[in-house]
Length: 119
Image 1: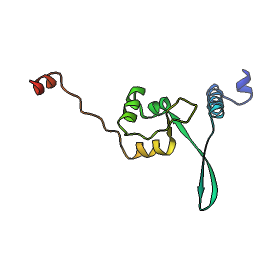
Image 2: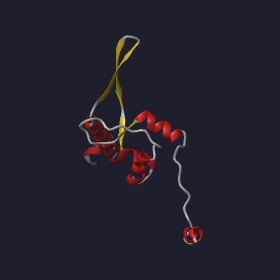
Image 3: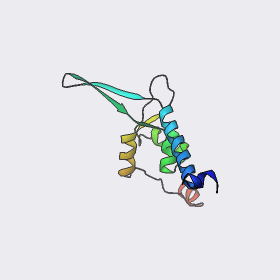
Image 4: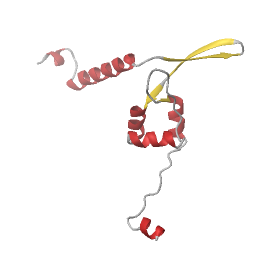
């Protein structure tokens, strides 16, 4: 009997615990963004969660270049915090965008279609 079996842990449980630990460590290494504004004469401070372009692309199963195209066409809200050099998508905006099916795929052209339309 190995040590894992003696402790009542299966190899699958141990790998799940390690994976969860890696996720938690990754989240703790992320920058903390705060939104500070005045509401009704009082200072309101709230934490805002963002996705990087790469995280959003993975979430919607799209190429990163496609996401940059959505930025350029104004289809997806993003911000670029001073000093970061990153495009960040507010988590709420990302979820709203996914939920409202704002992904507008352009129809694929058939091979001979572009030539006949011009000629």
